[in-house]
Image 1: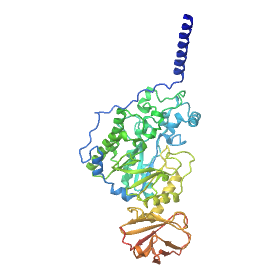
Image 2: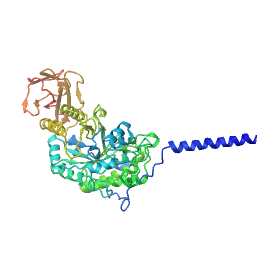
Image 3: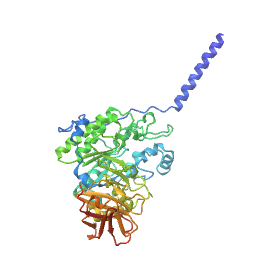
Image 4: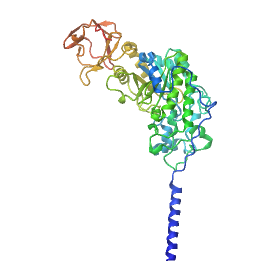
Length: 503
């Protein structure tokens, strides 16, 4: 009996020892606590003004900037360290530590992740050919009215001159304030200037999934850059807004946003999905009050732009990619951020959209009270690839002839007619004038069924960009325009219609 008991105790001890050994071998090592920046003088107070950090105050005082309602078309850009490998996407810093295929590709081209980590792309990001004045002139020729470069992406590298971190473009890499230089050039040619900030996503963005992969992410020497990244909670995606952010990290996020506000006075401050979670409302409201009260002192109309319902009030809603755009007319202004390449960051060999696709998307959005924020992808050396420049110039040529039907317009009572028909039209309105965008047709005799004489008598029909007037007839079936030209290949054209007394 005694021997049996001894054998049983020994067996239990052996089983426990094996379990502990397996746990030590296979368990995920504990993540070091997130390192946050030392914030000089603590939290910055909210400037005095009519905005307070609560939803009632934001709702009561916010008004969409008049310049945004006029603009309709802007340019965004994803440009940063991820432009150096130019592979897969702007999420390269995440995938080089977590995606098996990208891990292997990185090792083959740059080395092991503990020897050549993401930080080692910084000296290679030189932006030596960056010419902000040339960029600004190109943007102006495209017909865009506002520009939003990435001030900081998920990777945590600041593209501006930051007083809070050494990991910025002024102190490393290009050794210049890329955001500051571009802001001055863009404003010099009369365009509005904003910035995007993805800092919130940095919390767990580059966390490695493979415990056996050796990386530089948890090296104390680089903790003020990597964090180190924290493990996403409950397997949630980094963009789902579920990570358990520390109070210190949130205060740092706010301070970095305030720095961008103070240094560059952005006309628009854009955020990705990382701030969508309702649990972040208190810190987001503090930012909104800080930004809007600051703008009151500058005497500028500004706005936040966010996705989903990140801000219940006080923000221009943004939709990522055209496929997510509203399909019907909305009672609020919005924009779609849509890339010219497959991804948002520059990648070698990526196909590019054509001018017809961009123009069609712009028209579709404006006809429903939205706009288009077209994303371009500069290279690491500071150049915008020729095919992207040519695209912007082609858009500009179309805008030169037809922008009257875009700028400052709003949706009519219906956004258009004809979805898959041989004739398809879209409508916008400005100062009592109806603009009809002919998206496609096959007959030289155009019939717009949405414009019968029962809604009013048309007085004249002109073609934008030509100064030509056309014969027309109007009855209960619609407005028929005698258009003696063969199909105008490629791009939509626009009729300017007067006499309907529209609002």
